[in-house]
Image (cartoon, rainbow, N blue to C red):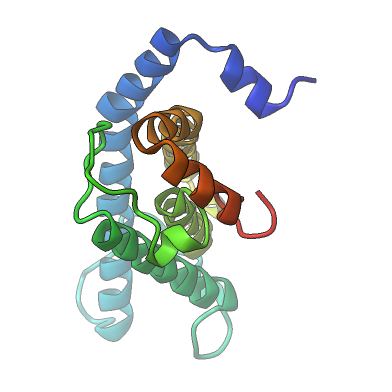
Length: 199
């Protein structure tokens, strides 16, 4: 079976661009809608627990009620912390880049500080951290009748993140072209793309 990298490499730039446009046009709005819907459900669920006499019901039946005893379930706590950490990583990336644009653009300097001193594509690392954290927090939805929406969310965010990963080679090539020796020296120090010591 061919590796993911081999499959991505076999796609022409036109196909990669079509996938990116499709994901941004269709999957991103689905992802945003799911965040709103799941967040609304969480709010309604917490209000119904705090004020049981009010006729408020969550949109979906929640599995949080089945957790015995007080406190936050471990998967929700760890997922929330991972998601927040991913957001912090992305904020640090945007600061190191002095803002962010989805399109490639020429820059007067190569970002090598902050998270860019650890991995070459830390914004993508932060994005994956947030997605995995959100999935851990809202995994309960897959145990409800609305599980199709949960799977749609997983497919949507998965396709968005995979399309972003397809850009890494193109970004590296552009940075090598723009910054030459500076990029070569930096890439020898910062060898890993997403996960320090792994990939």
